[in-house]
Image (cartoon, rainbow, N blue to C red; front, side, top):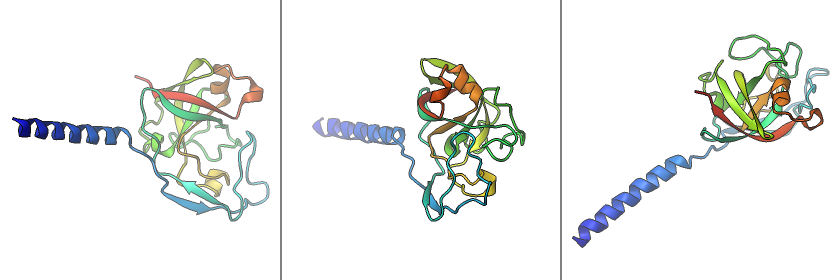
Length: 187
């Protein structure tokens, strides 16, 4: 009987360990890229965007932290309009989008090979929430080239949002730039 109880407890601990291990998945860096200075006038710093620096190493990711009903992220400011600091047209529909519409780009792992394209997410911050459409990827795997407006790779925990998202969250314009938020998929 003792042996059977010990076996059952051991089996239970193994299952629990496997379950907790799956829940606590981490996202490790996938590599680094070496920055180079952009050609003159080629890095749009409209929303205080960073430009790559020659010789600096930038970490890349193919993954993002696990998504939940309350996924922690950093909200950043991006222009999705033609000529804006977002660079090329949006990945989901090859179009530019008005900054007056609540649209976002998600870090590579959360973008999930376009599986969230043109779907909506809920963003919670500053005591308010807003529903925004996913139109682009904030590339965590590449950067420092013309396709990425000579900006570094995106960190793996970013929701890059239009001005409309910041306005809907009631954030004073002087505080736009980056802010801790939570987000979730909509039903």
